[in-house]
Image 1 (spheres, rainbow, N blue to C red):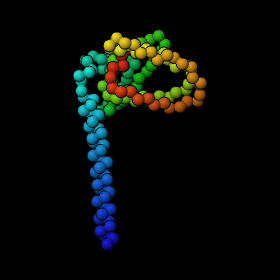
Image 2 (tube, rainbow, N blue to C red):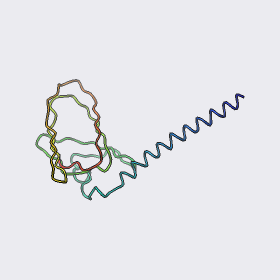
Image 3 (tube, rainbow, N blue to C red):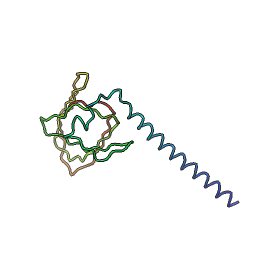
Image 4 (cartoon, helix red, strand yellow):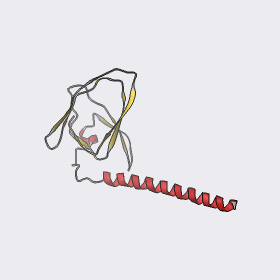
Length: 138
């Protein structure tokens, strides 16, 4: 009886492991295939090509690209560029005045993110999500 329970437990654990691995592969495959669609991303506007002074590759493989992005000083601009993959930004926020960011979109429209004063604090990690697409000039 104990052998049967052990066999069933092993099969159940194997099934769960296979389900987890399959889910991870499907998830990674979705992002890989989604990121390979070049139709909305013209040549020359990849962030690494168009804005190399502010974008540095930290790590890259077939599934992920990790960038270090440096925000320029007030009044400076980053050339129009795009990011083909969905992104999240991780930054160390110490509060104080935020930068005024103006996005010039490829369709000619402009999106302003005005500067705002925030309380200065010892620091906290902040995470933001961004869909794939053109970042325009900022």
